[in-house]
Length: 495
Image 1 (cartoon, rainbow, N blue to C red):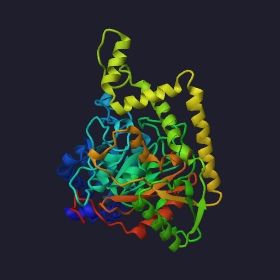
Image 2: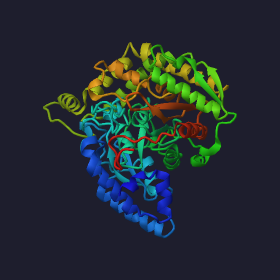
Image 3: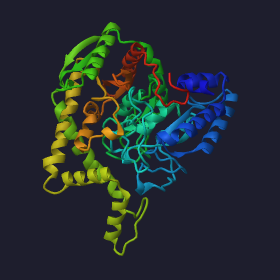
Image 4: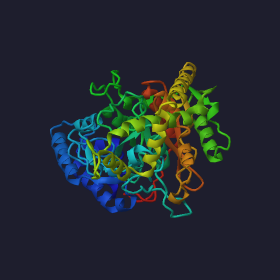
């Protein structure tokens, strides 16, 4: 059934509607691939083959009647941060290892309403905290890509590393991700796929396990931007159950892909040219500029003067909100409980046993910046800087339609190359966190391989709720790059 793994989400959708293949046949092929490859990749925490077969049979019945939504019969993976009714939802943490939600997140409910077939829950960094997908309590995820000169295990990026690896390896046709500071875009770049972080408020956060509430946003990850556009249209929309959901119409994203960039103004933020930037990353960035220019875009130099404050501001705001959000995991209301003689003892033992080192580190730092005497010095000041960062983008978008930057400062690196200093790991997010702090949409598209044979991505950042403009520009990059490479570990064999 190798040919079934050659489908993109869009081509599978068309083949299903034309009745050239059945949803059950497509689902079985992907379940078989998971059985074959995922014991090694570890991209799934929970597999749901019986649920998938049941959903596929229902999809075939709908298709036979000439009905079915835009994702009818499409095999998908769900990041294990979305609550799924009756299916275990762990956030990759020991403290939620046996949590079975009695409700469904809005995003996954929307995907099911459109006929998506769920093959299981995908691995991630614990509570979405990490840039490597090595902090999961269920073990790290292996990137299906390999260095050309080594068989070393590479990280898939994080926190949506399970989603990135499963899509890249052909185990699913699309997957949900969440992006707090780059957790869709960075793993998309590391795994050679596309990913979109929509505008904050575009997709409901109801039923998504919270990391940093003012930053978290759901988005699609898939092989192409067309596939992402199809998924995003299903995931997005106003939700009265989420107070931060914004009531704006959801456009036809797929239709925007062919608009082109003729007359579009593309900004190049000079502050993103970091000292010591990897020459291969810089060369790819220049290539992206050339591709857009050749397609008719005007290239404009712009300044985002507060960019250098992005990372420290992010790690104050995000960690403060994380410490507050994770206070609910005390052994009383959610998750696993350690028994002790006193209430305080039970709290301490439960949280000590339930959280991993990275989560504990972030809770401690976040609690510190919110503590009496330090709130004004850290958290309040960080929020003021965040306002300045957003104003930088607003001023830039008075002159340009989109911004072009690299997605990450490097390609995927080895498990054993992971820096021991957490601050070095945090630097993976240097190009992605400013857009997250500003709440504006951004995407990553695969644009080439580095000298060791692993993918590199380019990032486009746009105005609030102008995902269509991003998709139009991204599609031009995608066509120019013609990224047809496949990873070493792939359900259909390497290309």
